[in-house]
Image 1 (cartoon, rainbow, N blue to C red):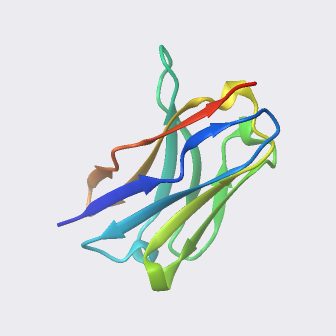
Image 2 (tube, one colour):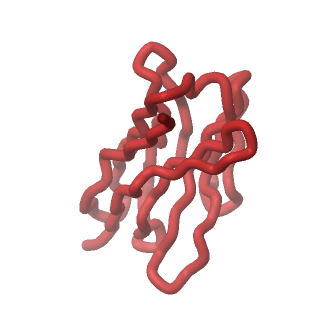
Length: 115
């Protein structure tokens, strides 16, 4: 069974950093495109970053060079490094994969940026 489990969220000061992890099971994360989404209260869920099976990544415009998506194939884990965080980054961050036409989602991890 495919499972995605996020971790690493928390409370951070403006300008701070967090590293989110998405540990996968039931498949090889490096064989499919992996995505990070986020959703703030009252807002639509939006794509933050994605990494393709070949290792290429892409980012939403609001990232502005602050975030980095990566993966560790040995650990079957995808990461999202969040730097220079601001209060507008506060949201639940979700890991996502599209595998054989089916979307899979993690439970989400809360990121709160506040002074």
